[in-house]
Figure 1: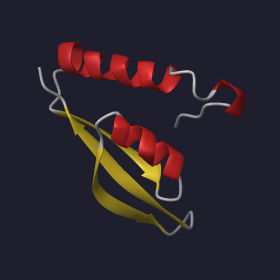
Figure 2 (figure 1 turned 180 degrees about the vertical axis):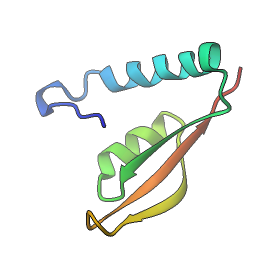
Figure 3 (figure 1 turned 45 degrees about the vertical axis):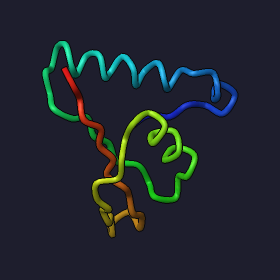
Figure 4 (figure 1 turned 120 degrees about the vertical axis):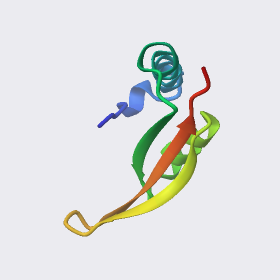
Length: 78
């Protein structure tokens, strides 16, 4: 789980982390895609992940938590 404190948001840290994860996925892990879950109520995060190239692949209900999340994926090209 990741979280950025409000005072640190908007400085590009999350984009840098995504870029590094993508590089690692392509060069080291050699996977075909990256995926994540994000609460469907977190519009700011969803916008960010879309800008980073992620697309919604599925919706997941979590009745034990009373929330719904979106599964977002991004293909990794080597």
